[in-house]
Length: 286
Ligand SMILES: [Zn+2]
Image (cartoon, rainbow, N blue to C red; front, side, top):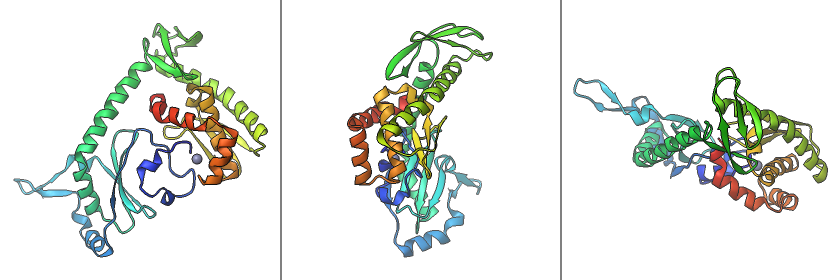
């Protein structure tokens, strides 16, 4: 994966598993809390069936806490702490570590209610801004430049994307038409660029696919298969190259060790700047 945001998602990155297993989560942040002692967690486990219910309401029915009802709780045997994050669809998710309990996870979540509210406000604002930018009169990132979308938003109309003509589909959706256009462009350009860089760096490569991933820029699976997010064509070319080099080097080194970063930096001296760009603007592409 080509993003370091997962470092924020847990205080112990080493426990997050093999490379590629943790998706990039640009909109999220995490708050962590140490898992309980074994005895406390055992009590928590026993109390599990009651968890999720608040004290009884006036009529004797349990009142569900909306925050808890809206939250996804996920057990993770390798997690060492409770981790709270907002998922891409704006819902809280709490990771429950080994030895942790649902009751503790809920108490942890309630203490972070303000953090969740703040993050959700930010998420909503970002969603709204994103919708405006993919509509006519808005502007989107294209090859690292904010590029306006001009034209008429009706079926068959032609939208001007920085000098490129994009035809609007029968649905009249400008944003969808531009995304289709960029995805087709990415499918033509990215595999070719990846093969070029693989040849230059002498990395064996079996297959490159371009996909519509919502949570990562790229990934590398065993056997040298690389998949890339079509949104790489929205990044400055040197940043897209960094993502490609990052995944290529995973063919050689399947982790984020020193050796891995040394290879990345040798092949892509601008890697630090590229990472900064992604940290700063990555969410604006999604
Ligand atoms: Zn990686």
